[in-house]
Length: 243
Image 1 (tube, rainbow, N blue to C red):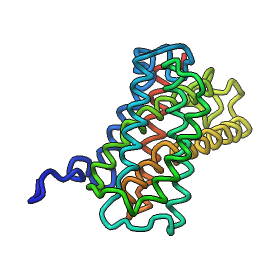
Image 2 (spheres, rainbow, N blue to C red; image 1 turned 60 degrees about the vertical axis):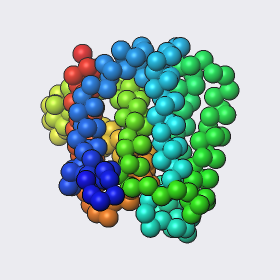
Image 3 (tube, one colour; image 1 turned 180 degrees about the vertical axis):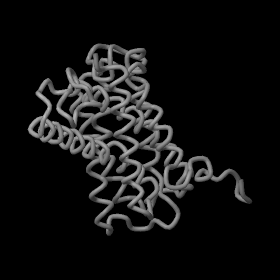
């Protein structure tokens, strides 16, 4: 609380690992059953009005965040990092928006992809004309998109772990191979592939929305956040999706 009222940053700030990181870690542990409660799964293409409304709401809140700018932002299109982050964010908006349209039975989901691109580009180009709000509130606005998108991530990645024992992956025991150097090497190779895919999704679904809402002055902390994201994702998949 300050003289201007409630400070949004105070709601989410937690140091190196902030409130969103801890919430996302907890969410990864229950994202799969949450998707099952809302529909058959996050990736289901069957009609699911409740899930569709949640996805559309998440997209609209993220668009509302893009329709504002943080204090001190004047010409973001002159910064290369803004354009780099805009692409992954458009991908997240398209992923969730297209899924929401399908779950609501709205035809022409390709229009959602075009709108996501226009929204992302428009938010960057017109940022100097947008209203200014506290960065903490912008982070809260993009949080639902992050949670919904990572629910989709869990459903996409879970099949990769079918028949695997994550705890024995590096030793080869979870791959059905005889224990030994070759099995361990192959297990490490599989793990690298999984981590590479997780890093790409993490950049698109988590880093881009949060960085555009509130740039992080300490890039190194993303390593710890990614580690928590991966550990909690694997734990959630192991609990709910691995026989």
